[in-house]
Length: 318
Ligand code: CP
Image (cartoon, rainbow, N blue to C red; front, side, top):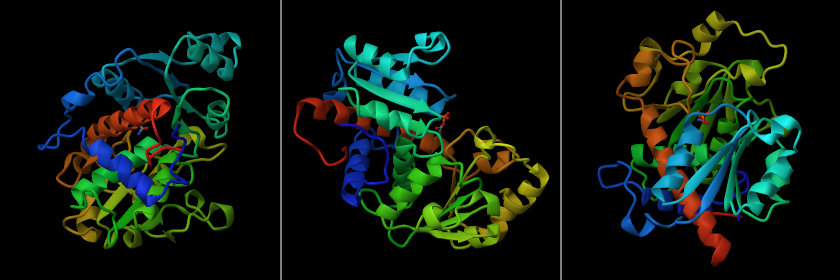
């Protein structure tokens, strides 16, 4: 009934959701809602609870709900009774009592969204829980990879995907790794020693490299990550050293990347830090494709959630 993460999702479940998302893209690859879905959420409402900043995820969920004929209500800490001390669980129960049919939530706490999901009677989507998971971002990344690498409807076997930058603080990286592994891609992680997983509980079951060149060489796609200062405690970031060792610009891309390799980024992009503006807008970039696919993926997820509250199980949700 909910989508909390990709950690336990099978290849079949992920491919199912990607296929559903593809239904919301026209033949030209642009967003198009088939007539049979335009009133799918008529009379339904979705609560968007964002307790961390967001542009892409929040707005694409809003648009996805609207494109399905429903409406959304947005809540953040400012201006809601959370500011007066109400617990988030009570806020969610109140929304449920008012007839809200599903919740989409972002919060810095890794445990809270799952805990609330277990205590309310409506589906919940994790829109980012601290540095843990961001499943709809990973789904839109996988959809973008499928389409860019000619693998629509199929896995990513034989394709190498590099995830580069501040990996350890990244919920996108975690969900991407789960999804990429499920779809059979070869995944390589690269970044400064203190920002990549080291084994033990942090071992993500993928290759970790200590040099940008190793990550980029032979990759079919490179997912660049933002340096997530908001999740660092007492860490000093040497920007110049970071850019020198791990930044991606035209010169580095030309030297180490395959000519047909693509560049992705979940956003927000800090131009000149992890990625140059020229590359973000260049021929390799799929960044705005990712954003577009985010609406399609969220439409698909919402249709599944609402279908499954009243009908038989489909494979994509737990
Ligand atoms: N990729 C992503 O989650 O972007 P927002 O923080 O703008 O939602």
